[in-house]
Image 1 (cartoon, rainbow, N blue to C red):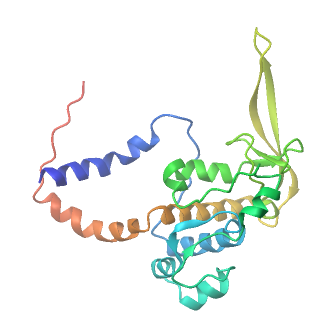
Image 2: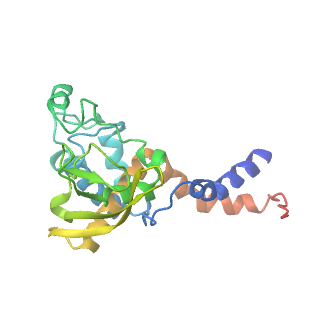
Image 3: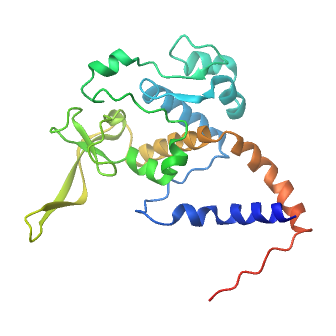
Amino acid sequence: MKNLTLILILLFSTNVFASGGGQSYEPAGTNIRSKESLRNGAKFYMNYCSACHSLQYQRYNRMAEDLGMSKDEVMENLVFTDAKFPDHMTNTMDNDQVKKSEWFYAAYPKDLTLIAKARGVDWLSAYLKSFYKDDKRPSGWNNTVFDKASMPHVMWELQGIQGAEFDSHEDENGIVSYEFKGFTQITEGSMSPEEFDETIRDVVNFLDYSAEPAKLIRMAYAPWVIPVSYTHLTLPTIYSV
């Protein structure tokens, strides 16, 4: 009983802990229960992200089962290597290609299996939508959420090219800082802003699922387990001061 009480307290307080501290971002609006969103996110992830980034703790067959996809759908549309259906979801870029690229500064692109847990879905959504043109960077891109990111804007054709405006401030010691004001649209993308936001939401949703596939199982059981537990559970009184 004590263990069950502790579990429920932790479950109910997760959002409080996750939202505390640091900069806040617009909610990503993800819904891990939506298999349509997860399938769409998988499609765009595999087409735009998997060349550089792996999901090394995820398997194609596990993804297919969880997302309601057939083996043929996955192998014909989402696998661009010689991988087999039970294999882990590795990337297509090798070390030699990374060393020759000016974008990554010889730093191998990170595996993204746990990125949604490490950064949070709101941060991840904001990051993917905040690339802007910066000719001073080797990749030609920068990011207002993650300054000097080496990653290029792989979805620029969908979003279009945007610039960023900054206000500069100089303190009494002559140190100049810059405050982001907003984006300016330089060229239009193939998607409307609303369509691009939905695409990013689905990609982030897929990465949230990939960070913890078992979450789908837990959420499926939760409506049956928690109500039953409540009938035999008295939560501790929380006093305010």
